[in-house]
Length: 130
Image (cartoon, rainbow, N blue to C red; front, top):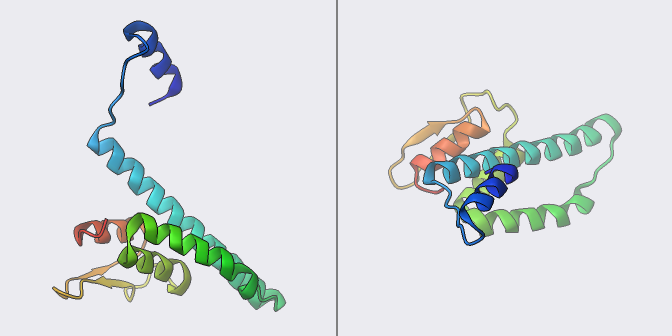
C-alpha cells in the first residue's frame, strides 16, 4: 500500500489501525520478487561469462564467495529444490527460449518446458515447490 494512502487512512481511523495484505497481493509480490531475482542472477552470470569470453578475465574465485551467500539465502527462503532450479536457470541455461529447458517432477515425471523466469515460477508453483 502506498505510504501516502496509508497515512491518510491512519489520520481518519486512528493510530491503532492495522492493515492486512490480501493473499493475492502477497502472491503477486512474491512472484515479482522471484522473477526479479532470477533476472538479476542471470545478468550477473552473463556479465561474468562475457568478461571471460571477451577479455579472458576469470572472476570465478572472486565471485564464488558471493554466489555461496546468494545461494544460501535463496535456499533459506525457498528450499533446496527451488534453489537448485534458480541456480540452474541463472548459470546453466544457455538459451532461455529453447524447448530443451525442462523442469521435471521426479515423482510423477511431469515435465514443464520453461522459457522465462515467469514460466519457471509457474512450473514450481504447479509442483507445489513455492
